[in-house]
Image (cartoon, rainbow, N blue to C red; front, side, top):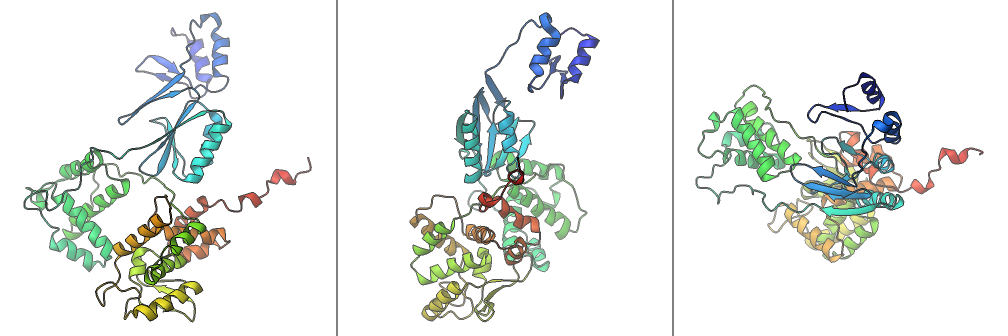
Length: 434
């Protein structure tokens, strides 16, 4: 429109209107009533009104074209759901009720954690609003660069001994030592001809960008790589703490997969081997991490107090958790048959604990045999333990203690998974005499 002070004052009264310097035009949100007010104000001066039936969303990775009454629900590999649609206030309002929802103002889409429960709620709302659902699943990237191995390059460099020794000296766990050394090896072999001490900040930033753009790693992996690199230059070499000018990604909040009680039962029933069933029952009934299960010793089972002692777990903490009566029964049967000496679950080699990989294989076979199609892992049993306790009325503080969570917010994630008891909650409106 031509420059006119009175017209500009009117435009400014419309909420969130803004001047687009690049295209020399005003942009006004299509809120209810805005178009009518513009038509009434300008009257015959308004020469043309064009309604675009298609919504185009473009970014570096994808281009989407959405029909006026269409909703694109896009399931990502990061266990999130992206929702792309036009101006539909009722649907936006429903999305805002989902925990950990986010609005991406740059890409113009909503994002929520993926779960079957949330997906069904979204589908019901779309159907209720008589909209069309378009559902897509993000494919595995075909052009992802794989991690380099000793077989890929000549003179592959192993992690320096002083790096590993410093981790041991600071009493890092075996898992953290294995993780950090592997991540640091990937970094130093990205620059195979450079002396480690001569690698500067610019090269570090270049490597971190390579991880994101070429390796297409997760936000967790990226943060761990940054920590592994910083550990060498700051802790091993004793250098000053540095900030590398690359944005640390904000970890996307996702909800863990959980098995129902029926699915847990089916998994245990198809596990006929006594030792295998004892392992899975112990993990589920006590809410154990897989590393905690393999490190259990016979002396950690307290049948008098019906407790299991978990020693030096994540964060170097000890705790007590539940010993189920049914778990105790099968442990005694297992004990009589296998006669372990020190470790509760011994491996193939005498005197060695059972391996985490073997437990994963047992669980994977059981899930497949039980016909469960969910994407689950052994850790899902721990999530299921917490969720089922919450559904049975156990106080969140007790669950936090049993799981060994330092922060209560970590435990509160399970309140977003369960919906049991919602049908018994009475709206305060129903108590009013109207």
